[in-house]
Amino acid sequence: MTDPSPRPPRPRAGDPIPIAGDYQYRALTSGFVVQRFWHHLKIQALLRISPPQPGDTVVDVGCGSGVVADLLAGHAAEVHALDANPGAIDFARARFARPNLHFHLGLAEEVEFAAGRFDRAYLLEFLEHLSREQVAPLFDRLRRWLKPGATLFLTTPNYHSAWPAIEFVMDRLRLAPEMGGVQHVTRATRRRLTELAASCGFEQLATGRAVGLAPFVSPLGWRLAGRLDDLERWLGSPLGNLLYVLWRRP
Image 1: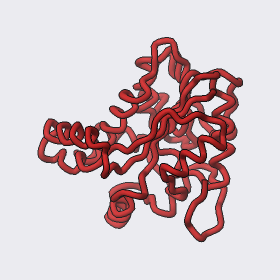
Image 2: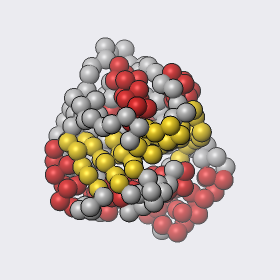
Image 3: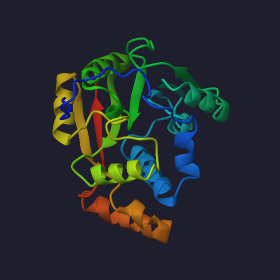
Image 4: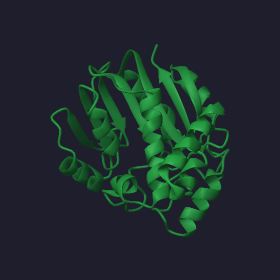
């Protein structure tokens, strides 16, 4: 998988700029309505495409402030969530206390888990934060962590959609910590994700797009936005701003 940027790749060692530990929590619970509905749709896609089962042991890579990990822990038997942002891990440990939920501070390449430990892995909007030479080694590592037959669910921005314009506007208006070229350094496409699955020894079970126009209608009402999302999904989400894949370890 390659990054089209002409700049030489740089290894990433955590967030390149300060990000508040509660950022993802606020985005889901108290952010502007468009942002809240965006994150709501992302969680709905997870539950629709790769819902954790009661007996599962799962890992959430790049968990941020822990909102998805907490959701997973409400369904799965055991959840391990990791992130390199100390503030995020401190917030998550304080906000989401469950006996089956464990937060780990560190880079994905530093945290150690036994081979074949997990039934499912989740990476929501994490891939784009990696430098290109870190991508394949990470997925090789994840494949070792997963049991045979286990699955991996991933979402990442779709740069063949309106996302580049959305990212540009959000950066210029300072609506989120700066993304373009700072946080987001690897641009995925459906073709590249399919190639990555094959090169890292995964079977691709599903691929698609999500989160199109519906969030931008949400100021007019969540019910209307939900109906638009239903229509967009029925049409195959042609304007989807996120890509998702579901892979399986053979």
